[in-house]
Length: 165
Image (cartoon, rainbow, N blue to C red; front, top):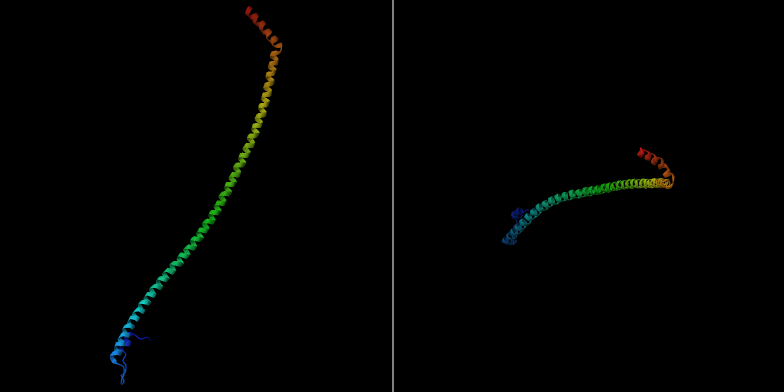
């Protein structure tokens, strides 16, 4: 068991013939007691400080573990969000491509139909022009023909009769 300052203070030495100077020994012991008390007090303060620092270290270690776990969870969450965003982006792109293909196909179909309709209208216009030309030519031929005058001769004669009556 370690010595205490009180043990040092109460220590009695046996006296011998021509022993040490009692005052010198007592002064030395007083100095030892004083230094020993100081050391004991400092040791106790250091132990308390070590205990406080160990408690703080434990607290900060707990905080560190919690922060590391939080960081891991945040990283996992960020990775999940990024992965989901990539999936969603791919789906959006696929959907957009499908819509674009559909729109292009519809536009091509309409374009083909319009081209077909235009060709049909051109054919109909050519047929109409040809028929109209034939009709006009037939009418011109009729006007050039002497029979035109003959057609109206009976009418003119009837008019003259009506006028003379």
